[in-house]
Length: 244
Image 1 (cartoon, rainbow, N blue to C red):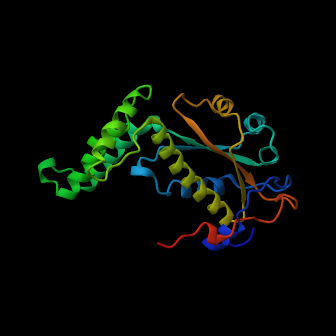
Image 2: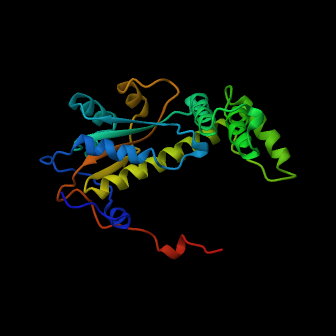
């Protein structure tokens, strides 16, 4: 294994590897450490509405390969990491943040909090419980209407519908997944993020609760000689970059 790469080297090295070398095993502890790097990614409101399922069991790998439509990136992977969103855990995650801040601020009576400390606590005790609850999407549309009316007079947060909050959770999970893949590249391991899967079957295989959603399944291993299907293509940088 080569020495660890710099961030730029790891980003340049990372490719979506479609075929992994069948003769090279990877260290599950090193993969786990890369998942630890994943959870250091930025996340909306620090709610960390994600989970990571690190699959090494051959029988489960075989089942997930079928659920991933038999893709080579799953079929030849030595391990899989399934990135899952948990929007349904917003209450527990908000409570955990409150506990963290109360301990950080010294467990003192609320009246002794500074203005900044009160804002941090109330963010999770009042604002998050206003934004996240929903019932069949109805409450979300009501909030959306109210917030947009307020938005006629001042800037306001508008991502309050069920669909909006799903997107927020998936964005955070995607950031964590990228942390994981760059960390893997940094130690010379390869990955392939896969969206092509039967997500219902993936959930059943992993025995996930109803409120979960599959963000992506990531194949892990070391690239074979023909594991990358071609040179990297990106549209010209100038077409995607605007300096304001």
